[in-house]
Length: 522
Image 1 (cartoon, helix red, strand yellow):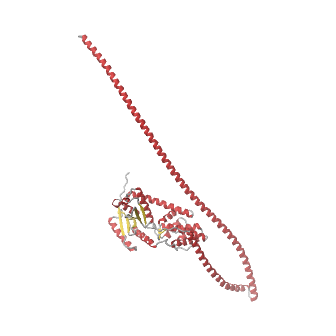
Image 2 (spheres, one colour):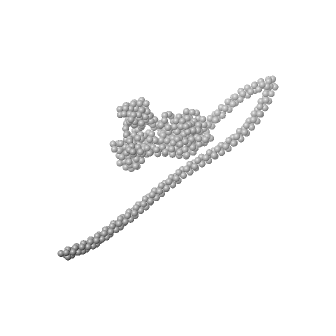
Image 3 (tube, one colour):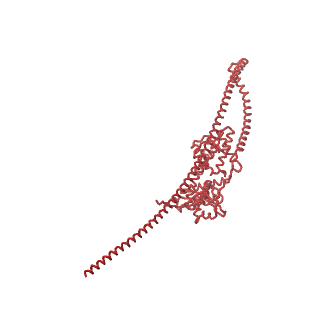
């Protein structure tokens, strides 16, 4: 019994040992499988990492190429801009050098002329002294002879002789004066005709009649609908903001911008062109583009004024005056463009001053600034003569320029050759056939007066005369004028226009009140 138990125990122990070894072998085999799987996964991860690294390197290389390309483009643009600025600077240096050389030549010529005149004057003085001495000797001889013959004292003889000489000389002097006066008048007329003929033949300025409309070309008629906008909100925003009349009709591929104010019309045309090119036409974008265009126009008129001053060679001028000269492009007088008229007067005055022996550069400068006040009449009260003289005094312009501004409208007498040349040139430019149109000027005065009447009322923010002066659009401050007051304001403006303005037909007064609430999320 005990033997069987021991035998069973041995068998159980042997079975356990065998089972242990078998289990260990199986566990080792599974561990090897797990190791192999881990190695395979590690290899796959490593391959993915290598691939990702390769892609990253390619992306870095692409970014480096793009950055290098952008750098090269920026460098090329900077070099081109630098070259352009260098060229402009060189051109200005050349212009200044030419001006300096001409001034030096003029001074040298004047010095030579003055030297010759000084020599002639000294010679004349010597001759005059000799004649005076001889005359006194003759008088003394005559007095002695007269006193001896007439039994008079020397003083009495002197008195009688001088009275006789005076009586005889008066008639001769009057005859000589009359003769030379007539001769001088004839010579002056011939000389004036010659100078005018020379000036008009040596300068031929172009003239193009100013119109009241501008045309914006469209690539497709479908853009008209985008300009109008939903329920007309875009075209309403455009007309309200810019103060022009936008006409969209059946004309193919075209929008007409109408306004009597050249500056407003030019800004509106450029704004429309940029909006159409951009494609995003909505009220907020309209205001953004309009603001940018206004800033660009201010820079452009200064640049244009600088170019005009440089081309005429009239010397250094204050930037504010050059800005006003550029603004003259957007002003008109009797249908004649103010800047074209100013340039014409400057050139003609320079030619006339040269023929009359005056200062050519000063005459051109006076001609260029004689109508500078017209650039201010839209913003300030008063006539263009007083405004022009005031702004020129403020920036220390020559008295000849001030005199030319006053004299070309008869406010002062002409006090110099240069001012006379400017007055004559102004009359020539205005009298040239086709240069001016009285009807257009009266129309412009009428619509300007309509705008001034509307703007003079309290609470009015902006006022624009549109639709050929048949409508005035008045934009009021919503915080100062309520709906009921808007109705009364429209009636008051209409009544004042009836009393003060002469016009055909009727004028529509359109008062617009809009309240905007603006807040920023920070």
